Image (tube, rainbow, N blue to C red; front, side, top):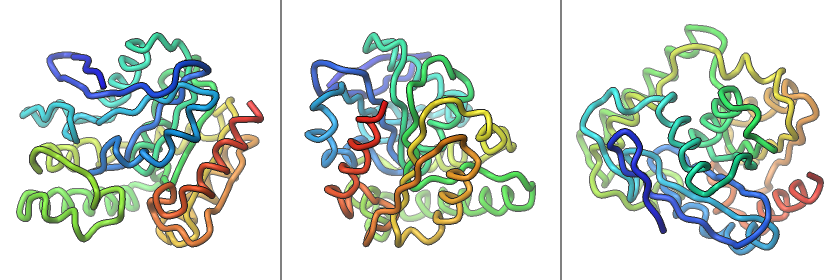
Length: 253
């Protein structure tokens, strides 16, 4: 376990494995790096695996200023973590919000990305109306955390229900900042992605099945894997099948 401080915000990260290309995995909204425990052994045989907690989550800081929670801040945090571990380039991926941020990172820093792992993720929205609907849901999610606190996690999917946070304050601000979207730049970036990309979705993750199909069609040369009998946390629901899909993809790089 390690910490770095960027702009006064302390970020928790950890490095597993001793050799090979770096994999940077980002968790979903209101989850933490703990959601990747079942991947450590499989992914460190030939790689260094870097896990981290986004601001407002887990063991990282929960800044009080709402302006500290944004897509740009998250992408900059990811770059700083790669700098801290001495990785000029990495395989970059994540689940849900972590997958979206990985796509945003690739757009901002394409030279630093070896490949993408996009897991149970949506790429955003081209139409303002659809984006407004997503943002409305995000704001309602934040409001529920504000009203109910961390007890709200127990009714959510596995990566969230098993997460540990010091308070709900960071999740409230992250929901209003990092989870909401401003424009279509990420979804519009898909046809220009120039690195090998793996799109993974759980067969039971109904809200994200169409998004997975869309990304697999729009990202040049992308490979899509549907994990049977898995929901939104495909890596937790079916770790063996998930790990096999990822390691087989990594072997082709």
